[in-house]
Length: 48
Image (tube, rainbow, N blue to C red; front, side, top):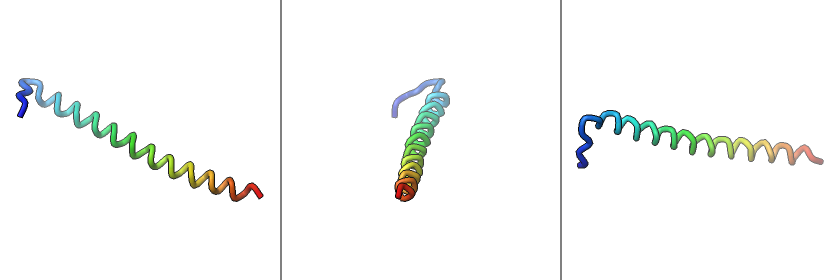
């Protein structure tokens, strides 16, 4: 494995934080996309 030296804890924590944030953004995008699609379908149904 790569020798990270005395800052290994910070580096690992930073990577975990970045990946957690990335997965949170992806999850929120998927959730919001589905929510908006349902709302658009609902509004299109009212169009008549």
